[in-house]
Length: 93
Length: 490
Image (cartoon, rainbow over all chains, first blue to last red; front, side, top):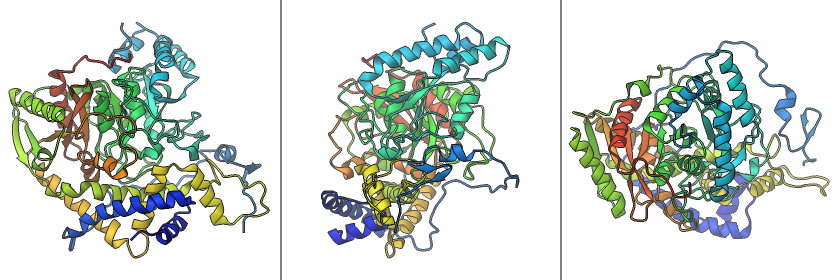
């Protein structure tokens, strides 16, 4: 059951502010989508290892070399607010 | 030379041989973009430096330098790829002003091969959608019928390519986002095997499913582009170290003796009669060419859509946690407050920055990964995913390539399905299992509906068997009833 309380809990976990109107809409839609997901519960998966990456990964090591690829100015260029080369945020509690 | 419909290799050859300058090519396509794109809304950012970039190539060619196999070819890049100095929003308000300091590996490789980036192309927000209606920049229109969707999420790439505003485009495919819009717009779209192409610099949606690929006008152009973008990248540990085959040189349309698999599960559903007819025509064509048709079965594909959406939403909820309003992107206003709670800071910023569909998937994914539900949802989906892949690998012991529809119907009207997410999700029924199993898949145009909308055929091969898939597509293309047909808007 995806009630208002559950929506509020998920939104908190997701760090997402949702309006009352959105909460109402999501509770119906999420219930429908999760109901659809329930289909998979009938598949017998005993002893099956979950598949995470679908093709083989050959592990490799990069050379342990220090490289400067970006300057501090480049890395902070997109900041919504900054002080020099530091990210600036409002006072938080 | 008719630049508008010239192939990628023809343009590159003409530029290399100085029959046409890269500048002339760039100017020709820039003019097309300027006059035609207002109907389509396929471009989100135009590259103001494109002509200068082309001139720089001409200078290098004049000096006798080899500027690469794609010399002077004008390309459009989906917004999902980071492009140095060129705005990259992923179709989202939260990245409204983001200008990356670097190029995605695939973009860097294309540039090194000589392309000219003409601009960035519209897409569903964070590639979440099957219609290109969830973009912050507004919907893109299908050039074949302007009140229809171009498909999603790489709809901007498909529309720009179909209208020949560029000679080649790049898309990304997480659950069919290259193949479905390619089918809706009548172009060739390829999703290579997972691991063939680096994901470095592609804005992450669902990391274990995302793969980049070409969206172009012919099978040969697709093969050529794939040769440039594929291969190991030390910045992406999931890329393969296998060598990149010379797909374009090895391309052959002889399918005699090849085994084409038809999936029992895909042929029994309710298909639009025009799609059904296109599939039947393609089977008859291949039979006449000497291919053998065999029935294969992947019973678990029944669960592909729920498994796909569950995994994609879960990975997205984790990947999109990085948009917090601190380092880049949109930040909500907090000007008149002396202090703010951290959760409010993140929550308000993210609530304002993400669109409805993205928030819906973040919520869904967060729920599926939350305590008490992880095993029943994400873990279970991973197990079913392995069963789906195993069944595919068994099926490929009986056939070389699997042929199927791309979608149940041709392009639908803008606004028709947007209010019912589940119906929209079911749109991806034929494409998602390819991503779950990491297989290569593609769409090649093979029909037109009664309403004059393109219909593609989907071909899927086993891991790293792109050549077989491209060969069958090349054969179908040579006999395609829609060969040479173009949308009215151009």
